[in-house]
Length: 303
Length: 222
Image 1 (spheres, rainbow over the protein chains, first blue to last red):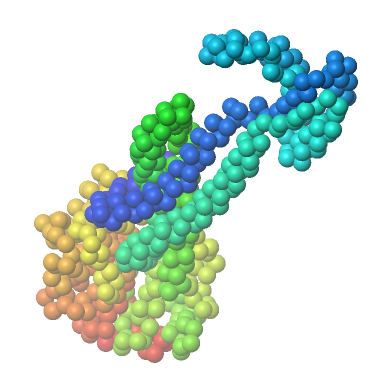
Image 2: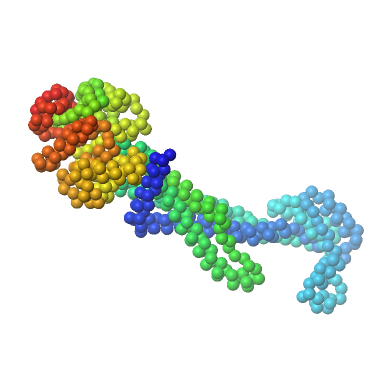
């Protein structure tokens, strides 16, 4: 246990010493890794924020069925019965024209306008919540409702939200694809850096193998280097992400104020931040392992 | 301690570097490996130190058959040896102290204990005052002594030196040989490869003389 601990602290302090002697190089590599990790993490923040925004209104997707002004009371009952039987409808609500007027009058701003009216201009209406939200079933339902007697107009609300959802889904897939590609780029950058270090340390590696170093002894400092690159790069990425979101929100605030909303990008949460760093460390470890295993094989076959 | 039995070593695409070599080295012996350059001295040393395996025949180190050992156990066999390489293999990116520290790091010896041992080894070869010097600033003889300090710091039971006096003038060479004698006297098995005439050293010690990969006559006196 003691030996194990010593070997690990030795490897770690060796790596830190190498980092110190090559400050600029280390900084540049970590910055490269930081930018590579920051790109998908900013994309994630944007998608997440838009997703949060839309999830509030997603549930409001419904169909409004306005009846003709001169319909009979019997028509209301037939429609009601038909709606109750329709399996494509989750539930519905009837709002009579008197109710609707009452709701409008409750708002102060409308009072003057409404008083100037001679009679109630509002139609009776059903608000229908469909059980299936995909475009096709909503289209079918809309057609069926339009054909009913006494129905004047059928309006599908929230169609744009569905389109936005599809766009968001597309955005998420694009983000995953880009994140995957960037992970490969990250692995290539780290593996190449480690390979360069192995070349510089080849005299030491060769000597160590000759005088009885195990493979894990030789591999250890490079694995630490890879993991540390990942960790520092991940922290850089978080720094970049927070800075970008902060600056973006600063310019977004006046715009959002114009629309009387308070939309802003959400900062990555603590779990998201930790996962970002962990993923970056894992990529660093794996690429270092691959780089060092390949180089060691070369060295040992040359003897 | 080291036994070679009908050992043949052939490198791919070349002649046999060693042909049918058999001998035994006992604990605490001082052994000279002699022969012209290209006779197979370095190959013999590499086989002894478990750096390479024989093409055929058996090499026993402490009764362990090197050919039958797993590659993952070879590093632990190698730690029994202190190696002084023909080209020194000093690391020029660190000072003398850290050069000598490497074998201890491989053996997992801790900082404080390591420091004591490193200074003791440097003291033994007369380089204690050069602890912080970079190897490139040392003379040829000093570099050789630094390489010896590194070889003995982990207290190996067998010390193997390939041409340790090769590029040194007579006085330095005598110093180095005296150093090796001192190690033999405390019980270390010392094996030295050299193409130099041995003088009276050859009369007192075992000599393995190689000629074109063949052991001509153990115990021959030049």
